[in-house]
Length: 384
Image (cartoon, rainbow, N blue to C red; front, side, top):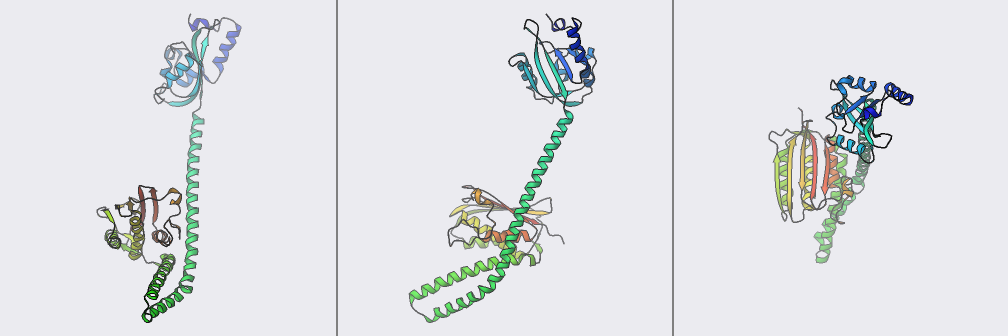
């Protein structure tokens, strides 16, 4: 027995009221047989799709579903409606007669006769295109808001760093005067005693004192560098010879290492706006850290390329021991170090950070423990 015979609006008043309701609702209502061939579509559905009854009835649901839907959607929908749970609900992209797509929320259910036998399927669909667009706009706003929050957090971190560096700079000026001058006097006195006292043990002690004096002097000098970056005069700097010379100097100081070094400079690499000696110092600290991280052997890659945003990118990658993720955000902070006591003051990378930033550039680091570390520096191209 067909569904068309089972459901006839003219059978009695009850069915007549139901049919009148379906004809008048604004939602799209469909009834199909068990083969998914449409045998009824209310006026709202016909108007939305742009078909007449004669054009639409007899077609399957696939005729009004957009190809943009997942390929498995129709199969899943029919299976859920014909079998347990005998209903399906979800979003579907439909397509009108003239090819316009729109989003709908569809509910389907299995239709049974009075004896409980399956005779067809019903579907009620509502256009949710405007709601979908509003949802997408809201999600887009949320993404932009999260991006803005992330940028704000980064700006706050940079501000905290800048305030720390500024405080270090003020401290450095005092240190240079209050410690530097007495330290120079102590150094002179130690040298004088070395010439007068001939005892071997005393000479050994004087040598040790001299070494510590030099270390303190170097620390004060590094700290003082923070006060000088803004006063540096920028000029056009040719990166390739500067990097090669700096790298050669560092390698000569670490000639006990068996490090394989590869350099790659883009042809016609533009000059950058910087101060040569300070820029060399920034690279020097990074090269030293890379070589120290690789113990006796490893590989060091140095690349320089031009970016489209008026910047040159310098990448320095080593195959050293790497930096734990919990320390990544701290590597550019003054006095932060993972080295043993006496092996480093923790100022090298912070000095490099300050120098690169003072030229209007940027520096970032990525690292995987046991794999190595990558430093990427952005430097502004010099414009005459």
